Each structure stands twice: as structure tokens, then as C-alpha cells.
Image (tube, rainbow, N blue to C red; front, side, top):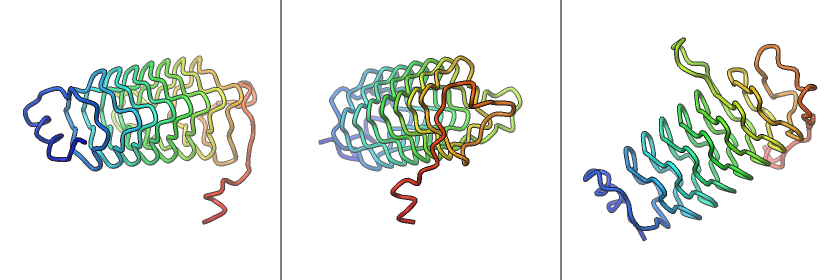
Length: 202
């Protein structure tokens, strides 16, 4: 099992991690080179991945709750059924990544790039996407993404680009916030205002 100390030493020496990581809870992997690395089913809640290079890494089934991926490179990662609840993906590069059935509920997606990403049946319930104060900086981008069957209820998508995104069967509710001029009726979305179990509990 990789300990927090092990991960920190690897970061400081700037050496790529070579062995599978099964647990690195609350560890610091910022700036780490983790291309193609195997994190499948790993316990990585609260881990710092900001500015890390995770291109084509294996994250399927991993627990990444509240993890920090600020400006991380997640291009073409496999993150099937991964748990990103309340994670920070601000300015993360996720182009071509596979988030099928992943849970991104409550995540911060401000200025994140999901061009061509697969988010089929993923939960984006309550995701946030704040507008950049910098006019030249890109906003949340789902251009060409596959969001079929995704849960978009209470999602703040006002600053999102949805050009050529596939949205058939995706669910939304009265709390979903769309870009200016967006007409959800034109894209095969399903209006679903049923309460979630966690909402009822509150």
C-alpha cells in the first residue's frame, strides 16, 4: 500500500509513479507525472492532483471525493463509475475522457474542458461552473461530448458550451440552469423533478 509519505517523496523527486496505488487518502500528488497509471478502485478521497499529468490514467471505480484536480491533465482517462463527488475540476483538461456512469455530483467544473468526452449515464447533479473573469479564458466546454442519459438536475450550465453535445435522455429539472437562449426541448432531454433520496433526508 502506498502511504502519504511515499507519494510525497515521489513528487519532490519528480519521478513518475510506477506501481499501482490502492490507497493515497489525502495525499499530495500535485505536479506528479502519472500518465497511464493504474488507480482503478483506489481510495483517493481528498487527494491533491492539481497540475498533475494523468493523461490516459486508469481511474475506473476510484473514490475521488473532494479530490483537487485544478488544472490537471485528465485527457483520455478511463474513469468509468468513478466517484468525483464534490471534487474540484476547475480548469481541468478532460478531453476524450470516459466518465461513463461516474458520479460528479456537486463537483466544480468551472472552465473545465470535456470536448469529446463520454459522460453516458453520469451524474452531474448540482455541478457548478463559474464564469471566468478573464475574457480570453475558455468556459466549461462540452463540445462534442456524449451526455446521453446523464443526470443534469440542479446543474449550473449557464457558462457551458454544448455545441454538438449528445443529450438524448439526459434528465434535468427546474433547478437546471442553461446557457442563454438554450432550448432543452430541441435536444431530447427528459424533465425529471423527482426528489433524490438525499434531498428527502435533508
